Structures are given as C-alpha cells and as structure tokens.
Image 1: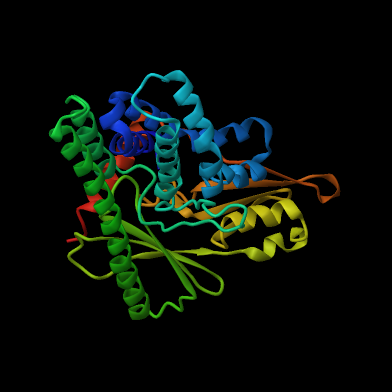
Image 2: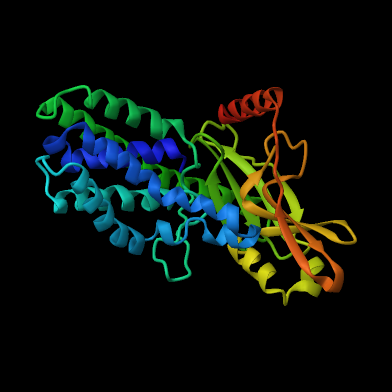
Length: 340
C-alpha cells in the first residue's frame, strides 16, 4: 500500500497499544515504524533491475524482520523517553505491532509480499489497489481527530478503535468483492466459450467497484473489466498473445528466470527489434487499459540481447502530463459508473 496508508495504520495500532500511557508519542513512533519496512527501496541504488524487484517486499516485509527489529526500536525509543510511563517491553510490543501490520496490509495488494521469508513465497491476495482513498481517508480522519483529545479521554479511544474496525472491515469486504467478481468473470468466460486455464482478478486503480481480470488460455490472455454498477452482463475482453517462444533461446539465463518467476507466470513478450524484447507483467494491468489507446503495460521490462547473448534488463518508465492524467481519471470514473 501507499506510504500514507502505512503511516496511518502504524500510528493507529501504536495509539491503541500505548497511547493511553504516553499520548501522541505512541502515534508518532507507530507512524515511523509503519514506514520502516519500505526502506527496502534503497535497493534501487545498488541492485540491478531484476535483483531490486526481488529485494522489494522481501526481508523487511517478513515476520522475521518484525521480530528482529522490534526489540531494537523498542530499546531505542525507551532510551529517548526513559521517564515516560512505559517500559522497554511496552515500546517493543508497540513497535512490533506497527511493523508487522505493514506487510500484512501489503498482502492485500497484487505485487506479493514475502511475509514468510526466508521461504520463497509471496503472499498476494489482490483485493485492494495500492492506493485506495476509501480505505485511507476515513481511517486518517478518525485517527487525527482522536489525537486531538487528551490521552485519558474515552472519545480518543473510541475514535481510534472505530478507525481500526472500519478499515479492517473494508479489507474484509474487498475479499468478498473479489470472490463475487471472480465468479462473474468465470461465468462470462464460459458463456463466450473462452477455454480458461487460470484467472487472476484484481481491482482497477483507486477504488474497489471496478475490477479487471486476466484470463489465461493456452496461447495468450484475455483481459476485461467489470463494475458492480454494470447493468449488463456482457464483458468485452481483449486478447494478448503470450509469445513465449521468443524467449526460448534465452531460457537458460538465470536472471531471466528470476524475472519471469516474479510475474508468477503472468507475462507476455513482444519483440521490438532484433536485440530488444519487452517482457510485460500483466498483474498490474495496462497503462491505458480502459481507453485501449495502447498495449503498454504498467510493469514492462526491456530485455536487451548483447554480444554473446548477454542479457540486460531495464524497467520501462512512463511519464504522464497533467492532461493525460486527467483523461485517464475521467475514463476510469466513467467506467466505474458502469455499462448501461
């Protein structure tokens, strides 16, 4: 999830744990602890593209890291506030709760989180987009309002707990939404006689009403959208060929294998010229999937074949002007409201 959501969650959990004893200091340090796991972004400065992808949401997003780092952070905070009405154990417990809820929240998104590191398994429930205002805004408002009351105030406790309950309930509803949408996509695929081997369903950007599905067939993928506000059952799917054969000469390359494993098999390949190929990770969708003005995927990697068939990889970076962003949001809002 985005940094603001992680800050709010970390602060709210810390407030519930220790706010009555130390006041706003708990929320402050909870917010800090809630962002610590994302410090793994430093990998971009010393790792190549593929290894940076593997490093992200790895060790720092694991139960092991939370157990290891919480006592260190708890000790540090205790040394800063030795006269507060909280023991080192109290600060350590608060730190652990704020740290561990970060990767748990990330598990609801699509990228995948190595919660059980060192085991090579990424948890991805794919029921929440990485930025969802409906999750974050009510939660943040309730938290900030609660912190305006004195630490002993019952209203402070009630407002913060309400924020935690509402936000957690929202996450539960997203899992239910995913189940309903998966069923709807499967029924429509059956009606259209699409021979589906596997299906991956996730919400479209910034909300939980409009959903999209990647449906795998033997030679490619069908991608479509459905809103809870649609008044017709028909879904328009667009087809993308796998083109896996383009990578066949390079399949023994270890770095390529690591990149493909990151996609969990949800990828297509396009050839740009004799030495450049685009490997597209389907899990985050198309850059302009709603408008269908291009076939560019949000996560795409250029594979360059050098001398001696040496491979290098670089992530494609997209830059959007204000007019383009406004148009994309307009298209998203129109599609959320449903097909009539």
